[in-house]
Length: 265
Image (tube, rainbow, N blue to C red):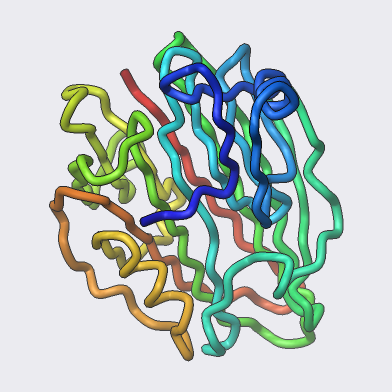
């Protein structure tokens, strides 16, 4: 069973939590917070994402839908060292994410040895009550004195319409309009409602789709930059996945990545 990071018992059967409603629900009803809670909320209208300073997200919620996202997070290996989650244990916050913002939000963090800085930029737009897009920009900056080899893994665990176990997923190596890799997901109870996670810069070389918790467990103990096995291009169940981007950042240089996340219809 998955452990949710924010649990509020409300009278809404879908447990629909908005930025202000979240606070009200927690004040008026039983609410248990377990670390690490998200640091900020970014909204367009009442469609919102919720995430922390390290760009670990636990909410992607258009106005007309329950939360579609259990977890989205980043893992990184530097110079073929152990794969590390981008979190408070391994990175220090330089610029915190605001607690609440409209449309855009940003943060920056520094790896504990001081060699890699990461800047996160987020843009949220809700085109209608069911169609919402979150574009995440990630900038990796080499603060060391030498070229740096980096393996970046974007891990995602979507539970579409708030229910784990009934999602179908497909890895698409060439997704329009940029022709770069993406995961396409649908919920069995809501056919035609497509959720997309895309690596839009074209740096992604490997992927993995597997049931929870196999992908995250593998990344969490990887001793070095592992190549994801390119397995399960189609699967059904409690879907989780990761896309891998491998790069060399020159001394004083930076690499830019773009990750659109969208509920299309």
